Each structure stands twice: as structure tokens, then as C-alpha cells.
Image (cartoon, rainbow, N blue to C red; front, side):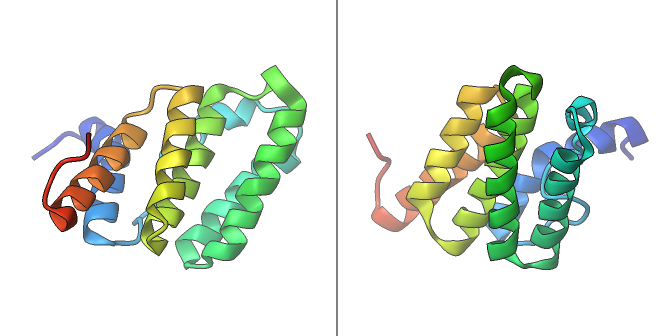
Length: 143
């Protein structure tokens, strides 16, 4: 049996892999808890992110994507006041929505943007799963 601490670490890391490969909805959140966002100035940015998560969990992908876009616009206007972790989480969540919809090229773009903002295991894993999925359908690994 895993310790509670290990479970808290493993679930956010492994769930996106399982969710994309098994096409499951996240049990608790679309990604890790947004701890870095607690320090973001203004509660509207944090509430926009939280609203997007709720919409994503509820299955309203279009509304979630709209909220994530609002978050990105507002965060970019704040510049360095927003931690890179916040950008990366939002981009990974958006990529997950696009991957579930079958828009693989947009999903890959968003996962790559997340990695530009911050090294994030979930982005690497989701990119790898998309590549493996494409290879299994196409009969070979991409270059």
C-alpha cells in the first residue's frame, strides 16, 4: 500500500497518462492543485482558473477552453507576476481537452508550449502518448 504522501504525488503525475490513454475523466482535477496560483495578484485570475477546472471536470470543454483562454490573456498582461507553473498547468489542461477531441496537432502544440513555460512531467507524458498512439495507428514511429 502506498503512503498518502506518495499517492498525492503519483495521482497528478500518472492520471493524465491514464486519462488520455483510457479516455477517462479526471477524478479530482484536470491537473495538479494550483498551489502556485495562490500567490497571483487579484482573485479574478485564480477564480477564472478554478472555473475552467470545474467546467472541464463537468464535461463542458468549450466553456472550459474559453475560461482558460481568458486566463492566458489576463496572465500575459500581468507578465512576470504570474508563475510559469500557472501557464504550464493551463496549457496542459487545454492540450488534454484537444487530445480528447482528437485535435492531436493542437494538443501537441499546447503541450510543447507548456514545456516552454516550465518542465512538466504531464506534458512530456501526454506528448509521448500522442506519439505512441499515432505510431500504433500509422504503423511506425514518427521521425
